[in-house]
Image (cartoon, rainbow, N blue to C red; front, side):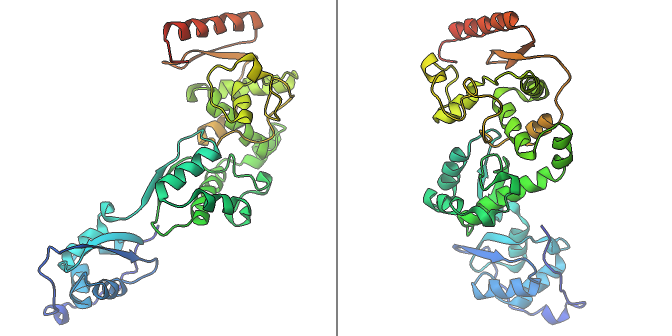
Length: 332
């Protein structure tokens, strides 16, 4: 984000007698610095709000602080009746900025993200749902077909306090578009015989099925199963179709027919099942070399995952996992 336009006098004599508060200030007040404002314009806004005594004193303080041109647009918490030099320091201090900080981890479903955004920002969940009912303004890639699942990019966001649901969701989609622009997804997906949407779908599987250190291996398992052909048989997709997050699924749940039950249906699930990060997307585009068809995490504490192309060996790995669960009650 660019700094503030610097418009300062060459001489300061005229401003030496400008009125200034002694400070340190009284009650808190929120002010907004908008993009493209000059320091004089900022000073005028601060004077109007009672933060500084005069525009001249603020401009003089800015001239005396070599960092003042680095003031960023945004909302800030200052005080009434501040010394102008202190006001400059506050505007340069990141802790003075007023933001709604929201952390979106990798692998979270859109439903979780929307609930979290509503909780952290105070914006009603129904406002987010209303935007998603007509998502044309969000900048989703054409291949998303209006579905945000997979395209709300995981990151730490500092949303301004006046942001509405549309701006917040657009910011997250913009982040996706920015990140994906670095990966040449169109050409690389085509080279793999996939569409960009399928790549994001695969990445969403990797994000919940494997540890980051094994993403490229899990990716190879996906491609190997598609080539066989062999059903994915991923519990994560079944969970998504059922709106659940269980570690171990019962036989009854595994037999429930939804479009996302990859035990019952061939190929990839119809959409991404979460919102993957850059590492998972990169692994979906760059699978490791190997003949594996099976993998199992045998230890949830270390996330140790074992790979094989032998079904009998896979069953042994599965027994290891069940033994881990038995020895660690409540972990599975």
